[in-house]
Length: 335
Ligand code: KG4
Ligand code: ZN
Image 1 (cartoon, rainbow, N blue to C red):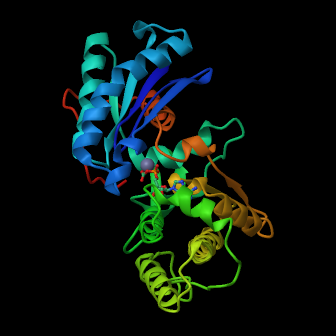
Image 2 (image 1 turned 90 degrees about the horizontal axis):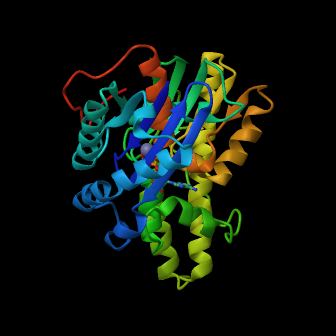
């Protein structure tokens, strides 16, 4: 079965083709980061318009890279939510229109399910069951995954998502959106241990997270140092490092707790923040003494992409699931 996957939930247009026998045949991405850069975040209307412009050319591109024609497609999967409603509707309408024209099945998939299955796209991917740490701009969740569709939420952020915290701290440091990669780069110049930020909610039991306090801590640290006449590039690098270390430590503590609590020996990390090098290094060191293994998607499949939608859709379509005639778009949708 050959599945065309379409991702348009936010600010990336992603298209890919996944084949049962040969795996991923082609994938293409258009990032809108530059279009939104001046606004400090994603502008929904601009995002929708850009998806409209990009979808068809990206589809033609992946078909040509895979050496296929439209009639070689067996099914279409698209992101039905959660995300920006206008952006989702572009992908949903496009997918249903094309599926109707080709007379093939179509299926709306959950964006976060696709993120958490993304490590399975890799040649040496994980096997079920595993604990998934989902860390994106909109979600921070620990999920027990026993099989496709068998998910149990173990814990989640009670306020900001980890990526959102990165983006907000970055703005305080004068860095552009998306802030995660920029904080990570600046932190490399940071002085270890100049500041120690708190590790929120780690000294009480449970697997929930809270990141909004770190935002306040960042603001106050910058304010105090500025009042003391220390506002320079080094201050910013030191704050970036202290912030990143606090987020990474907090995530690592909770992942360890989730592995111990469930007795599962495999951890996977997915979502944009999963591209963070410091997080990867810390988690690899954390699982070693526990004799557990940690898996990641390749960095380009941590952030939004069409490949993960093609794969998640393929797994469900192969099990016989498909949409009815109605196009689906759910801005809020729990997994
Ligand atoms: O999964 P994603 O591409 O989109 C959502 O579904 O939200 O995640 C985007 C988030 C942004 O908040 C971005 O700042 C963060 O992932 N991010 C990172 C890194 N790369 C992207 N955060 C920390 N370190 C990174 N290297
Ligand atoms: Zn995402």
